[in-house]
Image (cartoon, rainbow, N blue to C red):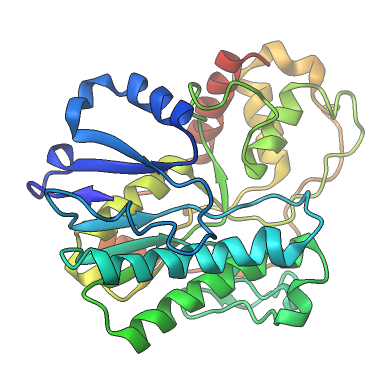
Length: 328
């Protein structure tokens, strides 16, 4: 949540929600320069009724809310309870709390995902251009079949629920959603003290430098070929918060050039020769682009938010350096 004192983001006052006091203390210590402009509210379970009721009340009152919380992992036993409910109830619960208790809020920016855009039934879908107009067509019945479907559906159902809330409830605020694909980039070292606690996208780079493909004759297939740096996602949230033209819009936040797993191997081999013996063989096959696959359109993010996307080599280099600080 953001309490605004000026258009300059550096002059905003921020209240963050965390699940524990220990995490709040870590963030506060790492950003001591913020002083009393940074504080925290503990929300242990975003899926509980009224979870955000107290969090959205502030003096001075909030002007904007960034809702970024939603679980993403595949080690689940109950897709409905562990993925779908927290995403949907957490999002709608936050919006309900803002409407009921924070009438000063004018803009809510919600972190959604390419998972809410992609059509998993179409595969590589050559000839199609993904944009903000696309929606994942997964049904409730399909969503609970496996964790992969459950994750994609959780992002889709949560985002649709947010748009439906605004349409039906006519609240005091407008919303914008941020829809990124795979996310690379440096990890926050003071919050990640273990290489086992990385986001799923960064895990493939961690696995490379840890030698999990050491000497392999084949590079694993890439899967999704589009990506974005985590810092660009953060920047998009802030820009959407402050742009009147961003109100009521989705934003497909994606880097200009796609990637393949071979690109990751090449960046590590070139810029971190100390890991050369942990990588697949230089003549390894696989991990390349297919002959044809879908295209994508990120022009709305450039036109309205002014996004300029980071290049892959910088994102991966900064990621590897941050992983070294944790201890590879």
